Length: 355
Ligand code: SAH
Image (tube, rainbow, N blue to C red; front, top):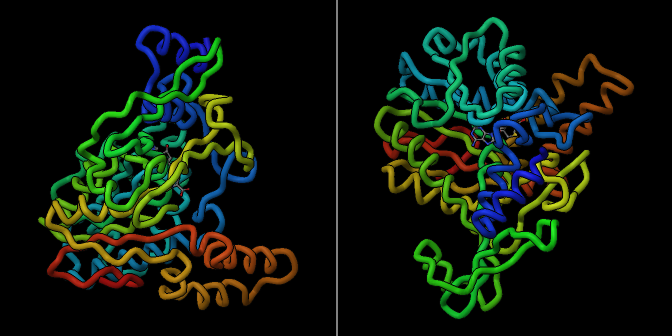
């Protein structure tokens, strides 16, 4: 039995499935899921993320959250949380960088929202000496001030895909052609959740809908609005999603999303407008969507890189220069990745971001 066999059996029994169901099975199936069964990060894995490129990323996000905590009167106790912490690298860098912030570590209660048992193990190792509490969902986060980071978490949440037909939408579904997985389309039907997209799309346009993103954001934003705090959400995507962004990555190369279910990373661009609207509904303010490169420059990444570079030479120095470039340059991750901050409407926005 493989995930492909399991999916084929499910489709034969129930009919073609939405892209979201396919993504959920591929990424988080308890036995065969991509994240549940492996550590996919780093040079030997399938993709590399900002915290894996350089310690500067987690350090700067950590100091930005600590500054927001100070700006809001250093509330104690508070929740320090990360969504989808991967190998725990960002959190380890964040904790090291904030050790010198008076009272921050003493007041924090560390919570990690992580679905993958394999990655929970990696996080426990990276955060040796701390006592994080692991949660399955954001709903279980305590009702107290919340300072939160999420890097490349929302892009792993399952999306549905719709193609416009008149004022209706056909949904892309995954079925079988013979024994092979293949895309098909449902007959057009109204989609109340896409009503606002009738104004900015044309016949045949593809629009993606991430139904899980709004409740997750709402839950975080409600805590921040009620108790104080800040969230830094970093991901690829834009203010409004248009077009097919479903992407499979295997061994750092693009792959066919239907070819090797459960063996490749599957992501989709984040529709940041949907996150911002969910935050607003929860009574929480959001910052302007800001390119990652601009955000990191404002937080002082170049000064930090200079300090780290001082004792280095040769290959180590080259690596640091290249890491700085990868994180910030508009042709690398600097523009592709965006940052959205959430904060209480009575407080200042987190450092590096504008209202
Ligand atoms: N933030 C890390 C890892 C990004 S990969 C980094 O930047 O390196 C996506 C992470 O989200 C993984 O840790 C994965 O296991 C986790 N994840 C994906 N979907 C999830 C879900 N529905 N609930 C909780 N964690 C999830």
